[in-house]
Image (cartoon, rainbow, N blue to C red; front, side, top):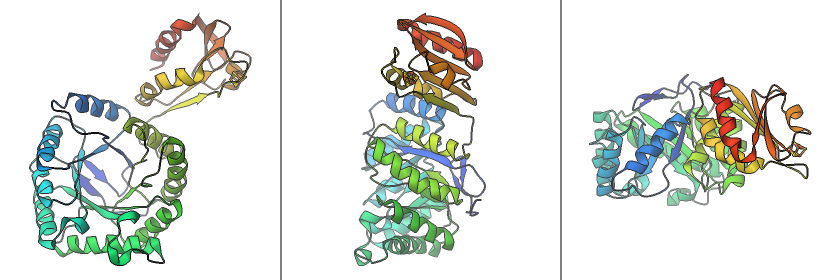
Length: 349
Ligand code: SF4
């Protein structure tokens, strides 16, 4: 059940209300001069189901470069701004979908107000909110850490609401799973702004997946959360894959999904399932069809254990075998495994 957040326009998207949860990630390096790498990556991210990508804009030159990128892509972009309100103003001369600001580090209130007025004028959404690690001084050390985060967000929303600005998205992030859950629950009980969910500084792949699944999984099941970022010390593509998996397994995915099953390998294996899965996974996330794909290590158990798979590949001595619903449909030498698998996969699309 959704808590009925208000729907806020974010570029071409509607965030909140009954709209699907939007997957977002953050670009993890400085922008290149010709932006070719970024354009290509954004295209791939869109194909993988990502709806929104955030970029740091650390300077006014950086804002112009990001603005140029926004002009060259159909992916809605978010500018992440700290300290200098003029960067936010510059960003809004370009088609950015959303600006993330922290009024607490922008300085005098008139600076934040200028940003809000221009956002209202240009129809740009603003993201505000609190990270537990950067609460205002008076709230640091509060006994109820989750309530302190909500209080910090409320103070920021007051500034926006005084100017009748309502196109806001709020985030309440902590690296502590329980605090993250509590803060978002408290906020959701008091406000209808869309919530951006995430565990901050969640760590490398494994800790992040565990923490994010625990925190975000529970909140989403309660109808709380309108956009998610699974923050991982790894590539943004992995963040998208993790978010897709989470939403698909909660039955909340907005598009068809390839369910990947693969065996962990054991002493019987004749096929490197780990390497093969890594090679094909980002492609599988770009497929817009409900399918189950299996990557298994041996023919002794592989086709049997994955007999529900629409397409499976398994080791078979010095060859691989391809199977459909448990029946072997082809064989190929190990060196042609990928080519043979992709050829069969294409027949299903
Ligand atoms: S499918 Fe074969 S290789 Fe993989 S774990 Fe099972 S028995 Fe081991």
